Amino acid sequence: MCPLPVIMAKRELKKMSSGQELELIVDDLGALKDVPALIKKTGDEILNTKEEGKQITFLIKKV
Amino acid sequence: MVKKINFIVKDKSFEKFMMMVILGTTGNAMDIEMNFFFTFWGLFLLKKNFKPKVAGAPFPFKGIAAKVFKKRLKKTGIGDAWELIKEAVDDGKINLYPCTTTMDLMGIKLEDMVEFVADPIGAAGFLEICDGADGIVSL
Image (cartoon, rainbow over all chains, first blue to last red; front, side, top):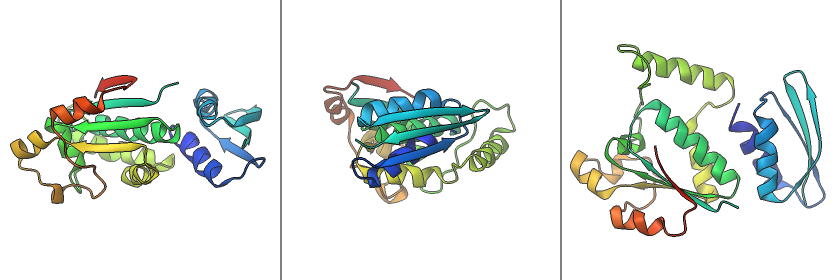
């Protein structure tokens, strides 16, 4: 639930080095807008978004 | 892109507290400077162990509603809101400013508040922080 997807994603991205990938799995449909908004700010890249029912999986690459 | 948003928090309800937590922690995650100015009743939210009530719930259920909301939030992963804020304060993008006038009016001292509040400021101090803000919101 908001704001956790964004906070958890940011927490992990902070620990990662350039080139590493993060698989973010959430059960919050609002994340479909929230996570891209965060990534737009951080300058990283969303490689893939997968929706399976209520679950969304983002594959994010740290730039 | 948005760089700084300032908020005046003037209520002590559970709703306003959660808005502060969610907006503040998200803004911090997005590298947006989030300044909160707690004035009048809003200052109570900074008091240690203060338990805000749900203003929108009918009397006499405002306290119970807060307990119910807290339980539901815990289920979704938001266990301790103050822990989330502390993390964001340590990160550096969120500032919680107590209003000096309100401290005098309500008799609330710095020792009564959570440890990670910013230095208390007055109206002029807050207006100075508004310089260059992309938005100023009254919660």
